[in-house]
Length: 522
Image (cartoon, rainbow, N blue to C red; front, side):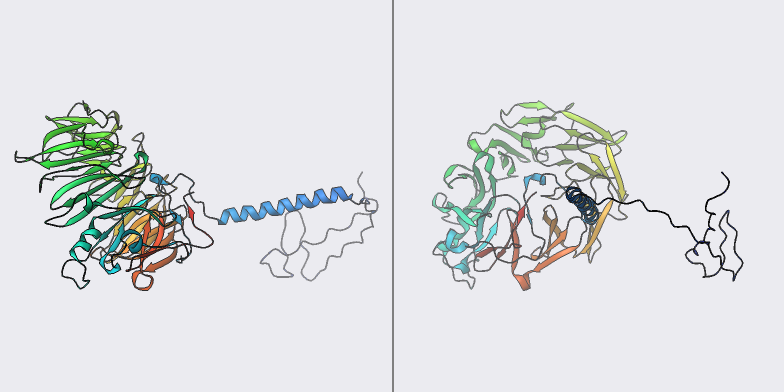
């Protein structure tokens, strides 16, 4: 067929493309261009009979409506997903559940009067409280008393009671579970009582307290349940050397001896504190590394591992492994050795078995969740080495020296790098999988990361003397500052057991929350 019945209408001229002047002819392949001024008038189109559409049944209308609604929801969800940051969903690093407080918090949680609960009858002016940990689920509370002769006007007996009292505190409820005045069993008759450090070991139901009384170093083990004194050891006056080192339930410490240049080292378990699993005389220059499984050191010129349960000594490697330059986190151990071919890094299992050795990685720079971080001397490059295999995962040039680290509580494998520039510092966040910079934040020169939650990180700003002066919260994916609190306007803001608290000078501690609630961990 060559003709149309009725006759084929003329095709109308195409519309002017975007940017062309109206009335200007535009050439399109296969179509003639009409002269300017002519109008191409199409012939009338014969009417066509339209196919009649049957109305949908009520059931089909409902189905069609739901289908359209699903398409709209899908489109909105897709846009929302593209705009919503993707936060990590790993378990909190080092099992630390941190409060996720994204808005400026208020003291709307629990309130506890520490002076009344821990030191009843002691004037609040005679005690200044502090917590043992920012991230442990439970914390030990100790107190500092004013010095003798101060204007606080506190008696000698009061000062000793303040200095010798320890208490177990639950940051979830704000309850003081128990208190224990150690001066009852260890009175300071001629000197002062000073609590140096405390460690909570919930997995074995114990609390370890290191303190001095009348100049004698003492380790005491208390029951986690009620604070009862379970065992203790004391060393002669002034004889304490290094330590104590504490990992898991193991404790290692040294005391000086009559043999100049040597100390007697002891490895014990807090469950059997008075029954050491190992003791040996070591030169003071001998490095000692404690993991949760045992102690790594050199005995008679050989590198050995002392089993934490049996005290048995087994040679590590070929016996020449050096423990003077190591990276460890209580579980994994990495050593650095200088060989003829250069510096080599070796990873060891907690049992002292060699896992891998790699050369050319550079010097130790830090540890993160999945990376052993290294840097080549004289460069600003940072390398992520897979902790499990020793394989190089990524390298990033930081353009200046920085201190990389993992972050307690993080639910990602990101790496935080602090870079100092004299009058200010910078936090650079690197993606753990690729080393890609995610964001950077300009900070005061003395700023550190306290911990991070799933979506919120917490920075502590300090004075040049090290006194905390403020807390800054930032978004863990964008680095955006969420809120800030400073000592002058908001009082002392601290983190106890993963929760934010406000501590007043009179011993009142209040939980800071972000209504309608605070989410811990993931």
